[in-house]
Amino acid sequence: MFNKISRRSFARLLGASSAIAYLPVQLRASERDELSVPTHGGEARRFPEGFLWGSATASYQVEGAVHEDGRGMTIWDTFSHTAGKTHNGDTGDVADDFFHLYGQDVELMKGMGLTSCRFSVAWSRIFPSGTGAPNQKGLDFYKRLVDSLLAANIKPFCTLYHWDLPQALQDKGGWENRDTAKAFADYAGYTAGKLSDKVGQFMTMNEMRSFVELGYKTGTHAPGLRLDAKRVAQLNHYVVLGHGLAVQAIRAQAKAGTRVGIADNAEATVPMYEAKEHVEAARIAIREQNASYLTVLEEGKYTDHYLQGLGADAPHFTAEEMQIIGSPMDFVGLNIYTATYVRADDSAKGYAVVHPPSSYPHMASSWLTVGPEALYWGPKLVSEVWNVKEIYITENGASSADEIAANGQVYDTDRTMYLRNYLTELQRAVSEGVPVRGYFLWSLLDNYEWADGYEKRFGIVYVDFATQKRTPKLSADFYKQVIRDKKVC
Image (spheres, rainbow, N blue to C red):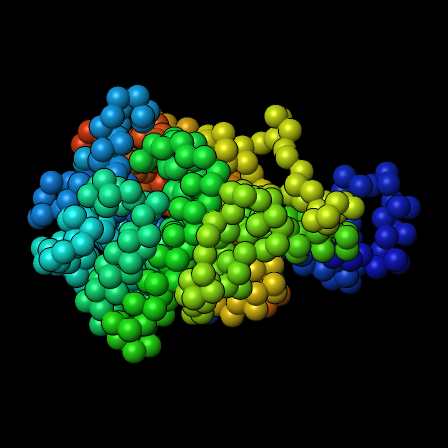
């Protein structure tokens, strides 16, 4: 839609209805000049110099080599090898064989123009049993990976926990055991200390909400437990405590200047439409919808509504623990795929979540509803509500029913549509001064998608899992052009 048309030109257009089909050639040059550039077109869609463009991945989803170089068992090894837990019984035993093929994949990144890469370290490669003596061979793998990225002028971002808890710690109670929080901090501090000479940004954990609620509440992810509300709330408390302890451990053991943050799938609350009352409702909602995750990390306290809602099931905690949990972060990473639409109401909370109807559009994954505005409102509200000065979109992407065409190409027009729409909203945020410094697409490669196994493909590069052949998709060409031109195309 055009920004504006002068009243004089508009009157002429109305009076020339019989010639509308020929309008572009009949307008005089002076009249054409009065039509402004489209709001989301041309230079208006450009990203700033220095904006980081990357991809994100996770150790268990891509590495394979589960028995090599001293790696210990994880809850996902156990879960995926339990009958009926994953699609088609799929496991991450081989995945993308990134452990052996990472050099090839770094070249793919370089060829697309990526300037950053987010990877995760497998805890059990560093400490096979979660604690004890470190495994040098495991550490050496990540050092080789980092060197390969730096040689390609790709900035590494390291996630220290992406769901693959060492099985030995789960056998002792996992995240229900407060000692696991301490063990995580010890691992995080040690690993960051060994990598921070070349890695400047660390994220403690990925998506606390996902591994807590899917792993311990619904049982659909590892370790597959279905705990009651009280046990989940206490476990959740130990998870955020583990984050806070890890922030402190990294600061104590890593090189001076190392930056520490989180990769959190905070619910991106979006006003139903941009009326003042709905915008304010979204602002209130982002705190309450994320009360036990990002909110408590930023504020060092649980909201009253959260604790009141749990009642007798609320977690036990100390003032010292809350202070640790609220340890200041240098940046916030947001994993945003969908929108949580909210409206104003007269309830005690001041808002209501509007759940999408069954007809609402979604990608190949039924949970992945299409809400591009989330990439505008999510970072905007996080920045404003908590005064966050540095934000990264640490995950965003889409599943697609990808098929190889007769000519060997993959035309994932739906994923390309999704990315174009979301990146347009992200650019809107950046242009308004929201401090988003980079974007990490999920993901470079089709990979092991947890309980969905290999059925759902999220990569911009198609992987033949039988041969490990990589084939860039249409979306890879699109992303390459966005990076090259620094604008949505």
